[in-house]
Image (tube, rainbow, N blue to C red; front, side, top):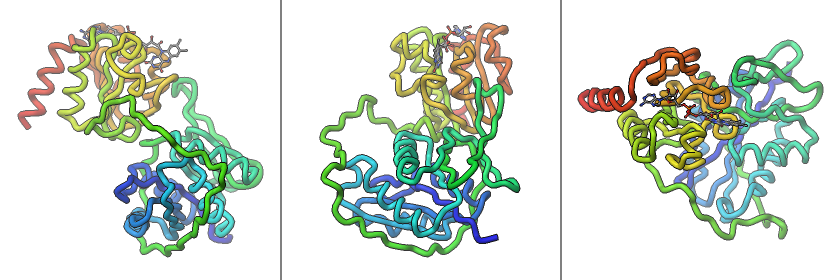
Length: 323
Ligand code: FAD
């Protein structure tokens, strides 16, 4: 059988550092075939990013630099991706299941008439080809999907794949981007709704602390922030906490919020409604603190503390600080 190439989109920070999802995308690609990376940066940082991709298992990396990266929407990336696609004829394409990744997947799907498997939590190969795993109905079931023909485009949920690729010295191909189309959508104004935070991003954080209505007020929600900071964790919230104004919507975990799959998820004063579970039930370990022993969150928790968050959490923070 010919060597099967798996094309991955590796997002890069303005500093040239690969984003956290790169290790998982290349790890998942290594489970299926030979990982190939695509990197699109502003000028000057692509070489370091390509070398980092090699350390994570990318055998080949297609890199392009362009001034407009960061100030236009996905067009530069789609162009480079299309060049790499034509060159390697990938069996599958893996992109992160974030806003940029989903945008890229949709545009590639239209350009190449390929199928998309969205919000995938794992992949494997069987005798017919590549199979994508989905966690559905609030993580009650796992389903599988595959394409009947052509390349499968996968948007991979962050934190869902543990496998990692082996370091190699990558073959680096430079792609000239040239002029962008006059119709390329550019970003003319940008304002961040959330305050700048030093906490890890909720989607990719290995540990997430989420607060619910049980925290009682925006002031009470500070307890979740303090525990998150003591653990170096990302911060999340239930919808009830968001609706009550304790936390911004960007922190909402669940069916109508962000989906996370961290190593450790700590739920403070969250009842465990099915819509909340839909966003966190694939976490590897769930710890719940709730004063109601009948709260449904305990049904899926690996470890539970029945108690008042305002008594338990300060003790937890003190213990962590003492370590
Ligand atoms: P509650 O259900 O009110 O639970 C609060 C918990 O805190 C209780 O279990 C209580 O025992 C406990 N508690 C109270 N005080 C303390 C204390 N001092 N110490 C310890 N424990 C305490 N929800 C989401 O989270 N995410 C979503 O994306 C989402 N999408 C939705 C989409 C739809 C279409 C619908 C209909 C609903 C959606 N919801 C979503 C809402 C969901 O149904 C629940 O209403 C919500 O998750 C409840 O949030 P909560 O657990 O914080 O609040």
